[in-house]
Structure formats: structure tokens, C-alpha cells
Image (cartoon, rainbow, N blue to C red):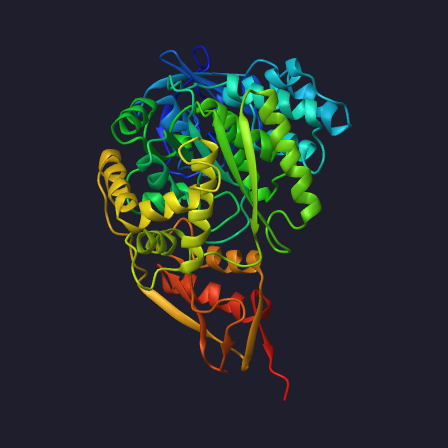
Length: 508
């Protein structure tokens, strides 16, 4: 190989590699690259890439093969989106400034409490993209379990709010709602937002995508209408309709939360302090004044006992109070999935059925949504004490909720019908008997193995409820998948997990 001329100011030509690294920026450099040698870069080094006034920090992967020249720097899709280069642009590569805030993370690993200044520094660097996924995982793990006390949680929540944009609505009462999670199919938000908005209360709902579940509200709503709205679009929708159901990740409302969620998902960690900071930082940033928390409690839900529920409720209320939020927690039944569908399109189908007041709409989903809507209406002063349920039910039954939902969808960019899976397979009862238990976690895992939420049509369609009497060979649920491979993968797992939907054989 001919000798390479010395690099000028550590510049390399940029090349788009077309490699999906999710949201983590990754840089690719050849092992013989002169910049690698001169700067001492190695695999997993953090490298600052600067071009036309934009700067990113990326994780280095070293290439030995000939598909990348020693005079080129390859960028993953995430890095390309952030830097916005043109193929062949020359970027300047260098070591990033020392990550001083990582010292606070190391201190936390060894049990030290973090003060507001330390958390401000960590979150500022997280939002600026200076943390690799490995470093983010260290921070998340250090805070997991009961790693954050009340003071730290309040400080973390404030840091997350201050690192992004904040919305203000000029109203004394702005409603919001969040579900703690762990209960498949519990898609009440899409029903109660139009009910609340139809009653004259403002409800600008920004929702998350799935973290550890087969569908988040944003994933489900996206099968019916666009959810990637910026702040100006959210404001226009809310001013026109009184409500919205948008994806919070499309706006800079607590942007650190979206970065942390990216790493929490594969770690499957969702500790109390981080959960509270995640939920309430988004609510403060979205301009809410009144927040209702739906807290399902059950052995296989996220909150498993009444004692855990009481502690978490108090935690949410105390942190909310410190941040000027009125927080009300409503404990709900977390023993079984809500509705029939588990997965974005199947859950959207259930929501439409309830809003349209169809005869075969899932009654449990309707009851739950009405109970939460009633609490919101009373909490916000749109209904008197004990009068919320009657008002919510009338708005649903006379079609005002359905009309408002269509209005919101139209304002967000137009309504569509959810997709239907090309591949379906029923799973039948192994014996005759009574359905005595659901394992929410196993059912969620089956739906994810079928492709949800990435494949919007994928998931589980339940055919039975708790207490149902079934015959051997009767379908318990139907698997939905976009591809035969995903269907087979989910089916293989489902057949080894009879506890996911437990049928007790009848005594003879």
C-alpha cells in the first residue's frame, strides 16, 4: 500500500454506511487510518466529529476490510441524521473534551448521593450526546432499584425539565394522565382524551413509545393518525380541538428522558426514582397543572402489591408537589390485560370499537376508560364530585367522544384504519377447565416476539377473560405477525408458556 500523506487538521471524507444503530451515533474508521494512528483512537473510543458548525460525539468502530478507505470516516444512520453532511464532505475529527460529569456517575455507583448541581451536569451532557450507551447504562444502573432518594428524584426531575423546552397554555387548569404500565392492552388514553376535551377541559397529551411493552400510546395512535408533531403543531391541534395525542419524543420536552429510555429498553430497568422523574418531567414540560396517574396493581403488573403502590403513589405526589403539580393517583386492577388486543394495531381496533359504541366493544376497556375520565373531569372541575362518571358516559354514548377523536385525528394530519397482520395462528386450550390467571409479562413477551411494536400489526388477540370456562382445543388467543418467521418464533415460545394464560382443569 502506498504511503499516505499526513492528514490536514485531522480531516477525513465522510461516507454514509447505511447501518442502523438505532439512536446511538457510531463512527467507522479503517485500522490503517492516519487519524486513528495520530490520535490514538481505538475501538469504542469516543470521537468528536465537527462539520459546518455542527458537532456530534460518536462511538468508534474499527474496520479492517477494504470497503472503507483509510482516508474515509463512515457514519451510521443516527450519526448521519445528526450531522447532516453531504456525501464526500470533509469533517474534522478529534478527542472530545473530558467528560467531567462521569465522575458523578462513578460516585453514584459507590453509593454517594447526587446533589442538584451534579445531576444538572450529568443531564446536560446526556442531552448533548456526550454519553455513550455504555456510560448511559452505568448511570441508569447506578440509579436503579432504590438508588434515588426523594431529594435526588426531585433534583433529577428538575434537571430533565430544564434541559429541554417547556410549553405554557395560559390556562389555570391543564389536564394530563399517565399509566405506570405493566398491563397489556390498557389503551385508555385514546378514549378519555376526547371525552375530557369534549367537556371543555384542555388536555395536550404527549405519550411515549413502548419501553418494555408491546405497545405504547404513541405506537397505537400512530396506526390511526400522525403523532410526530413539533411544538407548533401540537399547539395548533390543541387550540383547534382542546386536546391531542402526540409522541413526546418528537419535541424537546424533557429530551434526556428519551435518551435514557433508549437504554432502559434493552436493560429492562424501570426503577421508582427514574420512573417518577421520567413521568413528571414530561408533564411539567408539557405545561400540565393536574396529572392523574393510573396505577395498575397485580402480581404480574409493574406494581405488584398494595404496599408498593402506596409507596410509589406517595413518591409521585411528593415530587409533584415539589414541582408545583397537582398529582392524583388512581389504583386500578392489574390482574389481567385490558381489552382484547395486545400490540399497536390490535389495541387501536379496540379503541375504535369503544369510541364507536359497537355492540361487541370490549366492556372492560370501556369501563376502565370511563372511570379514569370521570376522575379527570372531577379533578379538573368539569364535573361535581360523584358526577364525573355520568358525564363521561353520556359523552361516549351520544357520540361526542367519537366526533372529538375524529376531529383530533384530522387536526394531527388525517385519520386512517389500523393495519391487519398477514399471518395469524390461534393458540388453543391444552385442557378443558377455567381460566384462572393471566401472566401479563409472559403475554407481553409473546406479543413482542411476534414483532410488536415495531411491526404495528403484530401482537395477540385474546378470546377469553378471567373466569371463562373453556373446552380443550378452544382458541385462547390468536397470534398476529407480519412475517412467517416472527409468527413461528412467537408460537414456539407461547407453546412452552402455559402459565401466560393458565387454564385450571375442572375437578372430576
